[in-house]
Length: 216
Ligand code: HEM
Image 1: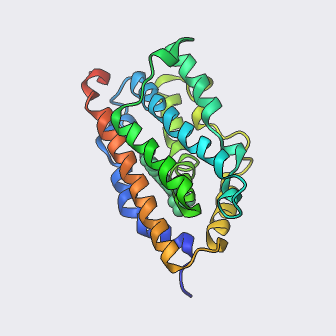
Image 2: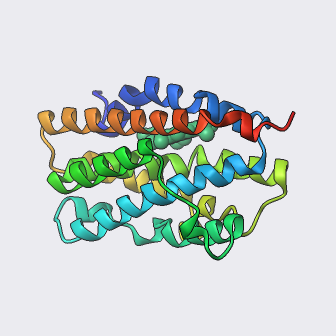
Image 3: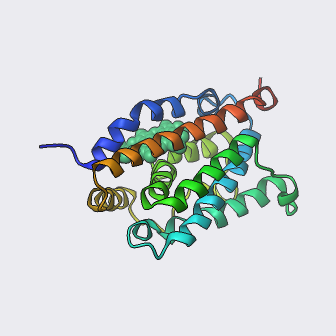
């Protein structure tokens, strides 16, 4: 039996997924080598990424294809705002600023996300499906290493998704049944690889400041 689109996508993005999850910043974070500030700064940059994703989602929600992937129960912006207030205090908005790599990522989300349905979904898939899988590993690290379970970790808690495995199945079914032809699917995969690369770029930018987070 030939693979489904979701299977092809997963396989095609596996190398760049490995690259993202073994990037020096993420490895040090998961290895317990970095202070809690490293988690805070990562979430700070993700605030801008999710603002771009969720602004774009609002723009495309009436689109017959992209709109099917707009799940407000996934939205992370409110959770990230709470996490920002926890880490940086009530004036966090004057402290947390996008790095150039983050700004470039947000520009691409807005550009690809409003130009065709697959552009939006490729960026949506790359972040949210990752958050409900690998993101949960970061959530456990935040708890085990730094004792943070409430505010500060809200970003990682999808309390409006009752079953992550069921959600993933539904999402994969949507990917498999979206009316994209072979060329669209190829273009989708390329955009998803690009989304991963933009994440790798963001982690590399954060890593430039890594000695600041060192606990040794
Ligand atoms: C913290 C490091 C990471 C770990 C430990 C990790 C781990 C995982 C695991 C175990 C899965 C498999 C879930 C399953 O079989 O259904 C997964 C899926 C996924 N991850 Fe990651 N991941 C990490 C980082 C990332 C990053 C940085 C991204 C992208 C920005 C990402 C995007 C994805 C996506 C899109 C999927 C879904 C793949 C699919 O089923 O189509 N992950 N991750």
